Length: 178
Image (cartoon, rainbow, N blue to C red):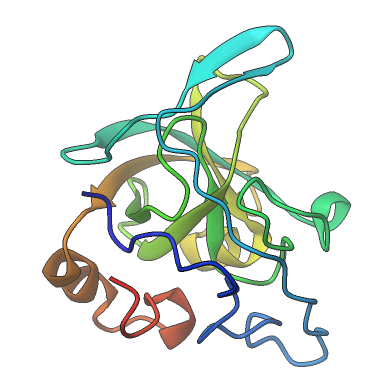
């Protein structure tokens, strides 16, 4: 099963996570309820997408892009408010709330992120993941706009913990959310 499981009703996505992404001067965003969508089919720009039932064994290489100011504060597909300064990502088919390790193949920089939105929907033949501005900064993607990456789903507490070692607590899964 993909870990962590979606939280129980009434639990918000911001539990245990900095609402302002730890950025000085960034305001905390109001909390919204969390949704799951495993197995769901949806359509964007006339193209139908099927969300995977499980992220088990998922590994893919392609381009990462990033998104930020134009979506800051808007609701994500998971129901959370998008925080451009936070550490999160959008993916077309991985179930929401899946933890992934993203590795910049040019620099070796890596980061553990949670999928909380859908996308990218531009250049879908190349782009496999959209990073929040904060994640793109840490991975060195902002200047060029895209970078070659490997995305690997982390589907066990041990894998998520091992991948998060040495990274900011903002990028780690909240304790007790498996």
